[in-house]
Image (cartoon, rainbow, N blue to C red; front, side):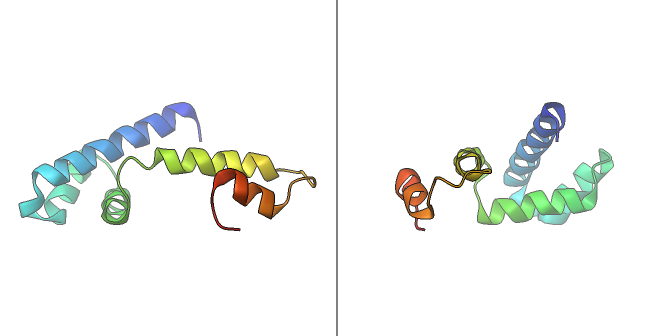
Length: 92
């Protein structure tokens, strides 16, 4: 995924969440139809709304830590799960 695509997706995610929160009383379908009129796929809008039910829209912090954890293990035999868990303050 390129930087341009991820910034467009992030912008869409922010717009969908803001629009839905402003028009919550009208329901999800109102939000979905609005963004489908802008030529966004229905499944994408529903996925964004579903994700916002379980996670806050500002999910970047966790993904940054996950990427650091992945880099710590990429093709390396000298780091144990126990050491990584301690370093990142997570369970093994």
